[in-house]
Amino acid sequence: MNGRYRVNEIFYSLQGEGYWTGTPMVFVRLSGCNLQCPFCDTAHFSFTEMSADEILSAVRAQGGACRRICLTGGEPSLQLDEALLSAFHTAGYSIHMETNGTRPLPAGLDWVTVSPKEDVPGLTGNGRVVLERADELKLVFDGTMADHRLAHWTSFPAAWHFLQPCDTGQPEQNLAVLQETIRHIQSHPGVWRLSLQTHKLLGIR
Ligand code: SF4
Image (tube, rainbow, N blue to C red):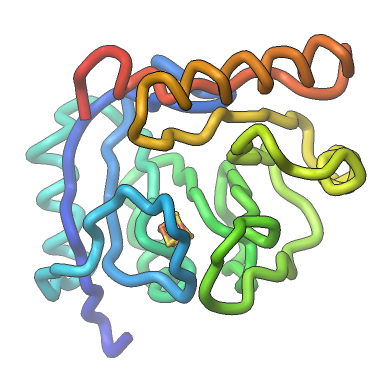
């Protein structure tokens, strides 16, 4: 990256999803993605080019004493390199990353969330997951995924497996998807846990 990174936004909030729900983190949203999901609700295309030092200054300004960064996107693996990761660690930050799992990652991340998009209807791009493990797997569920595909993801090597209802943008449909998500989790006890987009429910970023 020649020491410059395309940054969409940096903001301080609470992790809304998965295992770390409710935990303060500074979100560093890197611009761009190698996939196009029909339900993608993230405006990640615009960017400002920043150096690692400039990103760290912005992280400190936003997060104060918080020492936990969540790299997100877009697809942050398109830009994350060892130099940026090392700069974060040297400054004392734990680094989380949310990825679609289609690209290899630099070593040393403190927490990796894989959110596979292989099964998304209407996906554009090669969504095949190449990562072989993660700390958590977070599967966005539209209520229609075939049982054998759901079972496939439960065997992905991760400490936690979360099923997260897809936000369709339509309240009635969202309720049906949520009910189907809960039904599937309850019928597979000990396998899946529910992840909600709590930041949306709370009206925060
Ligand atoms: S992988 Fe994530 S960021 Fe990329 S298009 Fe899909 S939902 Fe959006």
